[in-house]
Length: 108
Length: 111
Image (tube, rainbow over all chains, first blue to last red):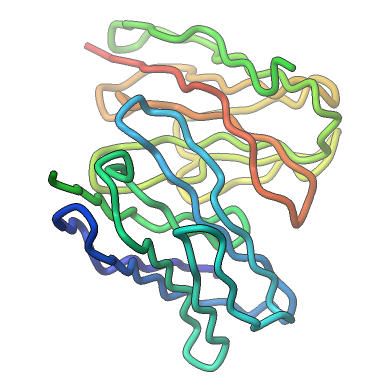
């Protein structure tokens, strides 16, 4: 069965620091999709990024970047120059299965 | 666009009562999902419907039933509510391979 592990329960950083959120997944699928979502204090779930299993190219989008390594089944997410507004719970997902989330607090 | 609409937004029940959570999407998505969110446990999949006319169990289906009424609507029913079902419930929809679109959630308390 699919399983997603986010080992970091909570992370606290000071504004402008870079922060990486870890995600490890288990799957028997040969083709699959991975996602990161954000849940700010207001409670809604917001899609951030998607990666499919056959494209390991890592990308940068603004202050967000991600590192997908199929060999280690990892899909890590980095926020560069963090801001207070980045404070939220971040979820990694493999298809429809979610990890437990990482609560990020960015202090001014 | 309304996206995914969940009703009600809040509900308090007594143990043993039944209720149905409603979910509707207007994006013509084939797949729909019900999750519950509890502190420290992320989003756990209760049931999903890959397409109209099909439903499948997720990780935590016990105590719940679902109905995919048509392509737009996917309801979640609690037949005999228990305090352990106190949670925030999210409905989502998507096209396979694309990200899920979530409703605003239903806060359910069972006393």
